[in-house]
Length: 380
Image 1: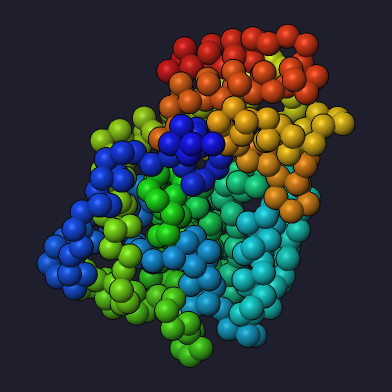
Image 2 (image 1 turned 90 degrees about the vertical axis):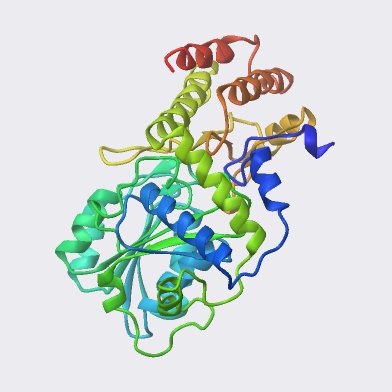
């Protein structure tokens, strides 16, 4: 399969705009010089607007997991309790990282089911330094109640550490208004830059609560704060990735966040409409405070069908979608609508998905899903 002819429709990494790729091919610069500092400041200004925050904001040369670990490694010591909310793969990852540093108090839900806020409050009322949650649980296609968890965390004086890896830049995320002390995003998701960078905002309250000793070395957020005051990173940055990030952020700013959020949400709504028309059930189980993700849709594989066969059928047609992770392997399939994914990309994906479904005897006729999706896009 020629990768240049492949349509990437998974929930990250996402297609990268040609102008971003061109930016990454620029000649190398002095990473301690004025040119890099100007680029660093430009990226930080745009990121603060996307995060909707006035807090300090840093860019780490490392994936979203690096920033997740920085958040916990700097604030949690061995005797500290951390309430970890889990209803998918990445909530589980937060729990596993927290267990390396402190005492985990898990709130575990079946993957894809909604968070029970009463249980979260019960655990926090017993005392904890922090609570972690994935805002948009990519593995299950569910958006979790960040504003509500932020209020509970504030009530019990706990830090709120949030994975916004697949929502920031694609959904309306109000870091400051929601009381998020540390929020994390990855470069390769809604922002549509190449993989390899992660960005996080850190509140003054989080800095005040940081460990006095036993801080990580490379991921020491105090070191990032000190260097950021000089428009620098504490350690050698991935300069070509910064070139790409700056250009990707310019694209976000040119589109405007309101338009970008609407486009990605409409894409997810079109996928849901198509699935409903074809009799395919969505995977998340929602309640009053949860919602379907606006950036990735997760669907149950029909009875008797392995979702990996759906994934393979799509790959044979040059379209890459995602299957389920870990315990969900073979049970669900996922389609991304984040980043630069356009309506035409989703329409092509749904058209080919109908053909795959027909080949697998999931549907008898084709066209219903494509027609339903088209009607949603007509609202744009």
